[in-house]
Structure formats: C-alpha cells, structure tokens
Length: 311
Image (tube, rainbow, N blue to C red; front, side):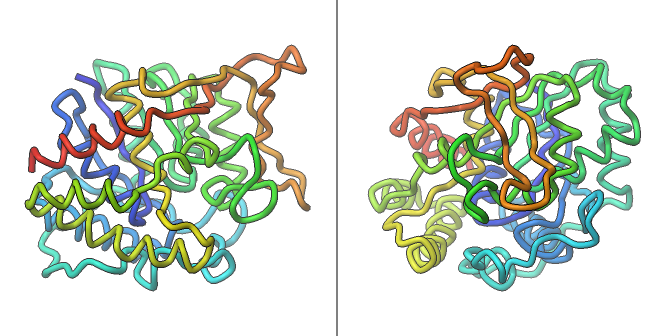
C-alpha cells in the first residue's frame, strides 16, 4: 500500500482527486493538507471539509499556507477567470460541515509525518506548492524519507494564466523552484497532459449511473465546471486536471512520459512561473522530472468510474 500526503486547494478537480484517492484500496491517505490557491484558504479549507463530511471521509485535514513563500499574496482568481465560482466549489449543495480541521499547521504536519514514518511517503500536490516548498525549506532532512512528489502543475507548452505559466506554478513560483530543485523524483502532470482528461458528457453520464453520493457529487461538480470552462475557454468538456496524479499512483501504465530537466523561471516578466522543460535534451542537465505527455482516456475514466462505485 502506497502511503501519501495529499495537498489540495479545492477546486472541482481537487474534489475528484480526493474521491479517487480515498476509494483506492492500494493508497493510504495519511492526511489531507490544504493550501490557498483556487480560492482563499478559508474557502479551500471549508471545501475540503465539505467533501469529507459529505462522503464520510475520516482522514485528518490540516490547514496550511494562506500566502506564497515570497510574495505577499496569492493570485486573485478574478485575474484568471473564476472557473470554480465564488466559493471555489460552486454547484453542489452541501449540508452542514461536521468535520473539523486538526490544530496542527499543515507544514508542521508534513514535516513530522515524513520524519517519523517507517516507510517512505509519496507527496501528491494538486495546488500551489507553498506547503511543500515551505516544508522542504524548514526541514530539508525530510527529503530522505520522500518516495516521490507527484504534481499537477506546469506545462511544457503554453500556460493558462500567462503565455508561459500554469496557475499552480505561477501562484508560487519560488515554492515550485524549491520543489523542482530538491533532487527528489518529480512526476509532473502539466496542462499538456491534463487537458486530455476531459469530462465529456458520455463520461459524466456513465458516472451518474452509479447512483451513489460520490457519483451525484461528481455529476453536480461537472455540471457547474462544464459551464464555466465553456464560458471562459470555449471548451465543450472541462479538463479534470488533478485526479491524473492519483491515477498515476494507481496505474502508471496509462501514461506516457518524457524524463527531462525541468526548472522554474523566476525572471519577473513574461516567463515568470514557467516550467522550462528540456523535452528534447538540448542540455546535459540532470533529468529531474518525469513529464507526462499522453493519457489513455478510456482507462483513466474507467478507473474513476470503478472507484466511485466503492462509495
């Protein structure tokens, strides 16, 4: 069983990642840590607690960084198109939140859990990398007990906030630099890959036939997400980015990768926050990242479907 810490900023696609991870019997989610990103920390934390309450998920939840490591605030969602709505998880109707967050700060939890684990832990990050970057800066020794870091973020092509940068990376490029330069094995699910994982009408309808709470939640999430993605980007079906990280842990054979050097541009200007991916090995720099390039669409969505049935 793979032990993971899941770092999120819900977010409609984060919700699907949580659903997938918690249903998979070969994944042990030790804790869910929350960062500001798709919305304010208050909202991303509440959204995580909503999901866990709704689906009776008992994994402990930890509140983390509410600002980047260097800049004084996260990007405003108004500046990039608020595809997740005012709360960050608009669409579904949730009942009263009964789950409470833990008192420990997410960064302290990450450090203590990794340091004290008898087995190496995999870190999965589906939001800005502030919690992870700060943990590595505060206690570099945890590197010795991390199996790998699986990230939804970046792009080897164009970004979705600027021509160069994807949201999760430009939200805290300095934290991303800390992670990508750590020497740890990195798996990057960038936009070039995640935009292949679109929730088509056929996919959503099939999940809806399951008829349980998890399937109804995904249908409601995708109904809202489909509308906003079409309004902002013109897509008929929304890309569901974040669960690709969990799918990789369950069945990496559904992906194709290029192993290459990836660096984060910290040059302020048009390239700020870019994941500079040496896809064609133009340099002799160490290949520090497995960059996902292709996904088996049917296998991916069948995996989500089968795991939703477990609720």
